Length: 399
Ligand code: AMP
Image 1 (cartoon, rainbow, N blue to C red):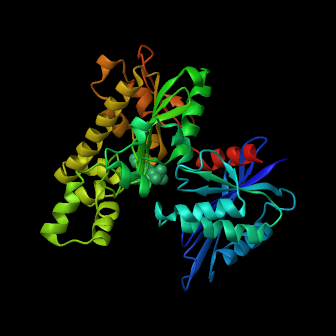
Image 2: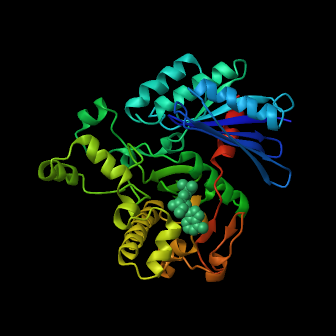
Image 3: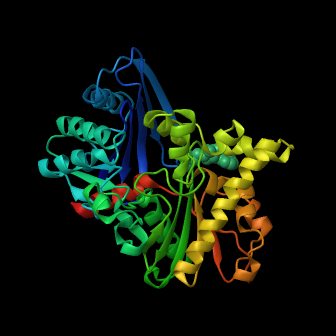
């Protein structure tokens, strides 16, 4: 049996998942939280053959990531599965920003680590935390190869006309300002799963993937390659999200600075954490938003309308960029679960070959499924994403 351990590290937390790669099943997963706080927390789920999880929780003090990895090892030793029986052949690390430098999963050397650290200026909240997780994991699993899998890598196939902003070229070059795109691991996984499910050659398919979670992005995929995506230099651009504005006139920044005396830090926080559907309605969870919108709450209805309007706008743009669309795939928390968002987004597109089947759209299931009508030219799918599995696959391919 071949096992891969996947690590997704934040500044004060990390998630882990041990995946058995022959059957591609998760053996255990967990979360170490509030690292460095007075009370830290670890949740360790052991997954049985039927996919059912038994959960073990502990509150303790974990001063840093290295201590977090020790706590993780203790959880494996106390509750299983045994890491001696399932020794990871490689550790896969999710890394948010790979800049223009990393376009594939990369075995981590000291130079690679320096490069990831160097890209922190593009992702100041994420890359330093990713490096911290890598260092701690290296201290814990010294002999095992570590692989970085970048959120941006799948979008390195974007053509220049898609990734270039119409900004002064010297300034853009000096400061590495361009569209990079994110959620690449998910967009790659979902587009490949859709092709596999339909038993079609991915190289011959034109697809649009809607990753709608708390963060959200849309990607146009031609023949398995990303040709355009909605997130940009940072994950702020594009779609309306839980708390992020998505696209907004950049002059709003100048305006609020001049009129409201807002500084960069305040604007950053406003745009990233106080806007989106939350900023419009006070509700961040799509379940609450649709419920309130349906109950006649005007602010919630407006927020949902703005959310869907932006989705349609990008969808239309990508239809024209691709020229022909074979599949539209919905994924992530909202994409997989909100029949209402899917229905409203694709309503009225019959003239473009998109015809939903209402009953199929409403039906819930854990697996991948078609929700368009049999006579729809475009096949619409719900595809559950699995970023950890994709990271594990890419990790294995790199070693
Ligand atoms: P993610 O970031 O992929 O975990 O997605 C989180 C988002 O998924 C949250 O905004 C949730 O409201 C949304 N979500 C989860 N379950 C449902 C559901 N049953 N219906 C609508 N939205 C959901």
